[in-house]
Image (cartoon, rainbow, N blue to C red; front, side, top):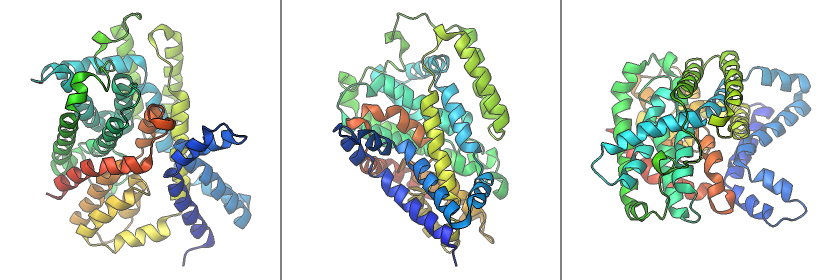
Length: 425
């Protein structure tokens, strides 16, 4: 039988999930500028949702079992992932990294036998998510979101184009990180337990994910072809610096190299918060010292995303009592569908971790668990750890300054179906 606090935690988790689907409602209330506009604005911030309800859980825990039990529970939570996403967002979003990525993407776009407007959009939607297998998914999401924001999303209106692009981006980043064993959070949580290395991931997951990512990016580019060619959805300046701001001097190559070394250092020490946070402090100092080569660092946005993920860790830690038993009782094929659906309301890393605790599973069952978890990672903002980063960067360019979870879900269904087909082959 579940304990009282577990039932309370599950109820609060359900409320938090419903809250994420209601942020547009609170955003409309905030824009009325009434006496409580500040509260409505806070409740309209998706990044604050799980943190707020996690605080409510801790209050309930303190009331039911005393403050010692609440503090003890917090001490047993692992906040490495929220801290890492915060650090990687700040570093990856720096101007030198963006200019370096833009140079590489422009070179790749020139190799494609199509118009530049189509090629640049395609490489952002395909190559950057696949690059997440090497620089981690949160870094890939940050880079792709910034490139889309600066190149395509600053144009007012065009909500349909933006939602379609966001749906494909979330799905592609979720599946694009499975070419290696360390870059995707749901894979990282089970790789050592299941004995999966990068060679295994490339053989069983990687090529399938690559085909799905390219197919999704190609279809999206085809669907948006007319708008991209006429320039009504942006000019692609986030990728094509030749058309960008010429009032600032280009970033020197050595500054790009230093930033790249900081990025590599954070990625390589992703399991060691004391190390990568120290590197982040050094990076901020370097960026301040060479401010003329920087844009504003995304420290506030990174903190908000970290707060969101930390709340998810706190609330998700008490869902084991129902989620683990549910997963253990499913056949492999049903498990794939169930994991895809459950990911939308839980977080695919938490889902695969709980699945790894189920005893007596075979290789097929394990494959279906992880494949389903990464397939469903683009359906909602909470489905995959990097999603809040993209959400935070792009939300102000949608109507009312908020992204509708319902429209995102609908627009992510088609690319999710493509991924599902590939993983089930």
